[in-house]
Image (cartoon, rainbow, N blue to C red; front, top):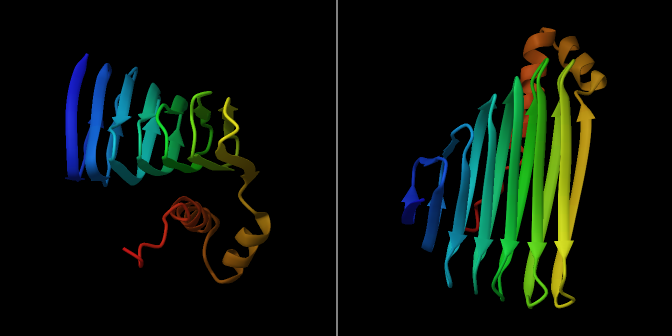
Length: 208
C-alpha cells in the first residue's frame, strides 16, 4: 500500500492502485488522473476539508475509489466525466465519523459508441450522528452510447440527513435544431451542448 499525506492546494493528483491518500487540514485538488485497474482510498482526516472540482477523461478505465470521512469534516467532490470506449468506475463514500458534511456531484457524458458503468454510493453507519450527505448524478448520452448509472445510498442512522438523485437523457433534438438554425453545424452543436452539460457541475465560488 502506498500511503500519501496531502494538504494545501494540489494542482494535479494521480490516483494509482493501492494508494491510501490522507487528506489533512484544508485541501483543494484542482485536477485528478485515475489510472486503470486502480483500487485506491482517500481518507478525510478529523477537522479537515476536501474541495475537489475537476473534469476528467476516462477511456477504457476500470477503477475503484473509496472515500472515508472522519469527524468534523467537509467534503465537496464535483466531477465532470467524459467517457470514451468502455469504462467501469466505482466511487464509494463512507461517513465513518460524525458532525460532517459530504457532497458528490457528477456530470457524465457518454461519447458516441461508448459503454460505461458509473457507480456512486454513499454509506452512513449506524453509529453516525449529525452528518449530511448529498449525491447528485446526471448522465448525457451521445448517439449509440450506453451508460449504466447506479447511485446507491445506504443509511443506517436516523440522526443524519441524506439525499440523492439521478437523471439520464440523450442530447436534446430541440436544442440541436435551435443551434443549427443559428448556422452551427450538427457536430459543433453537439460539442457545445456536451461542454455546457459537463461545466454545469461547477459551482459559483463568488462567496470564497
